[in-house]
Image 1: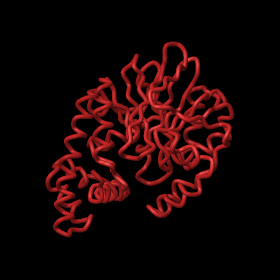
Image 2: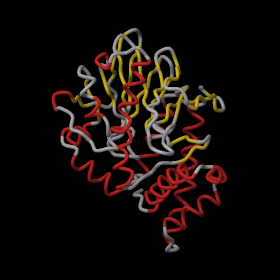
Image 3: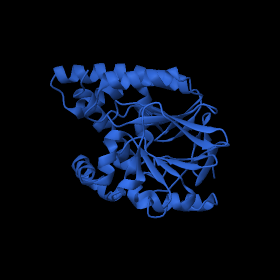
Image 4: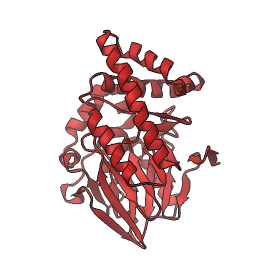
Length: 311
């Protein structure tokens, strides 16, 4: 069953058609609370591209989705990574074993980490060992299979589908977003926050660079996208309004976090302050135990980023 959520889509089926050239794939990740949380997008032209493969634990599910779409994994020409965090890129080395003809397109800062993912894996373990082990360990990507994405480059998939690469640092220094101008779809990864349970939240893990983040949002607004595709979770209309709302939350949450720092508060205390100010966060009360643990972990990580942010 596929359910429409507001004016966007909350994916419950394996495949959701968004536009004639864009599908949202659900890997049905077998981690409690994470079944409808990580977006993988399939872009169709003469050539085929996947945007964000997800973690290693979800690769089998992505392969099942491709099978349901009647696509051989070897028909995938590109795997484009918005950034190299484990929940977006952790499965790329594993996926390449089936997607033998694919080229991995990544920000220049991410290239070496895909060739040797040791540092990425260690950082994931340090951030949350339990979650990293559930997501699965990175496998390396053959060096000859990696191409560096340049800011402003255009990737022509044929049949009128052209993907524009835009560097959007802030969430991560190696973050980039992908814009398909003909349909007005912006695949924003984590650069525009996340949208789960019908609520927009920030995702600003340390080291968070506030000025870079805000500049990236302004850059995305300049594109005037029609649809905003989140890494977490799904694709929704009113893209510019959503980006403006993200900017507002950055200002509000940052002010609260910095006031907390001056008052000597802990991240947990600052998180509570933000919940009291931002009434959207009342949704936490309706979450299941697993969903609460998922979102609270991400929320505290975000608060840590805001408290330690560089201007």
